[in-house]
Amino acid sequence: MVDYVQIGDYLFVHAGIFPGRPLDQQQVHDLRWIRDEFLDDERDHGVMVVHGHTITPDVDCRTNRIGIDTGAYRSGILTALVLEGRARRFLKTGESVAA
Image 1 (cartoon, rainbow, N blue to C red):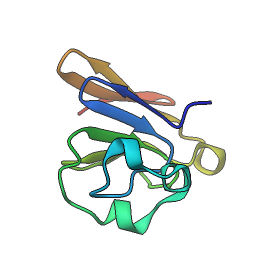
Image 2: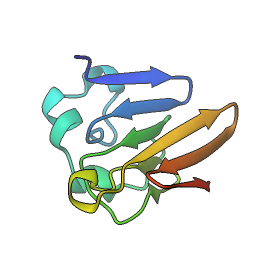
Image 3: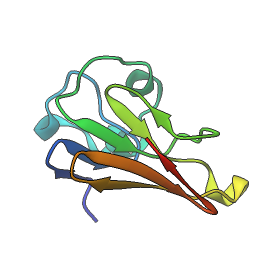
């Protein structure tokens, strides 16, 4: 299992990153468990971070991150991010929503 995947300007990670720390110096614990320090940080991370780990009622789309954990095990709503060129949209169980 890899701890993160970077494709172009997007970084896909389980929980998030430690803000201000270069990607090659991130700690595995933060990548898998971080919450408040990452969620509350509004700085540009140099990439758009796509993450889960923190359940929200809907997609949490910010200028520096996109949270897609809508709590499928509890809510029954599974959310996915679709990237096509510069366009992005979200698929949810039962619906499709443009970003």
